[in-house]
Length: 357
Ligand SMILES: [Zn+2]
Image (cartoon, rainbow, N blue to C red; front, side, top):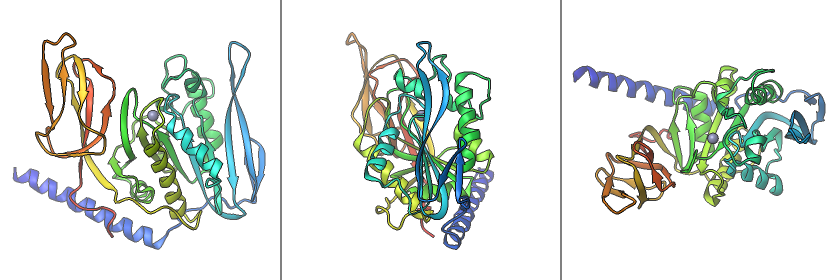
């Protein structure tokens, strides 16, 4: 018991020390690095001058119908030098909110930086996008296929292209996702709390929730981190559904990040982000119909009623209660559930505000 307490105190001290060092780091260096030093940037062999906008289409493959499939990459260069920010969406083909975030920023021209360069890839997984699917046609998950290879599966080839042709030009990245399957996520950024740069960027994005998450092997985020390119993962809304709050929070977060990096002069007001260190799934105790009474983003207290599971033939109705205090990070919107299916994603916050210096 005593050992546990000491371990906990040590952990708290370590985290406190990390936050103090980050505050010093941020105040000393608002623009952490800037790669955009060349007058001409070559992407896919195409020259892009300062002040220019360009669209580069990388060939991916040819469909069985002989239709050529390309990967469009949009580049926005300011006259003045600054950092290079890469914004990617639809790595999971059915997660379409990110595409709408980029589209609106293009339309409003807010995607154009005043300093530096923005590289946007609105549809990374064109196959999944066309077939309303998370995966490639062979069932591969692109975000478990990094760093990829030149001659591997389609997923690995697309991952390779992104890693070799696009990522090397970027200093930072923001990768836009939604909850998987039918799960709706309240707008949140996934951040590695062991990595100071990841925390700094998450704080700059300032979403409603910042959730501790160690990068998963073979994801874009993890492989980019290995190459010293920090990538923020933004998760908001659910698959195949546009959600206004998810889109707006995404746009605001990107603008705040650009402002923090010195790429634009002003940005929307930050949120009072809640830092979530621990999270758990509340799962179905048996198969049946799931009825939620909650909304994502709500704060719940231990034993609070959240909804119920019913038998489709009316044989039972089992109430679901919160096992602990916390925030509802995500909810499964699929009413038909099997035993063990994820229903509510519950997050517990830090006992202090990590954004405070
Ligand atoms: Zn995703």
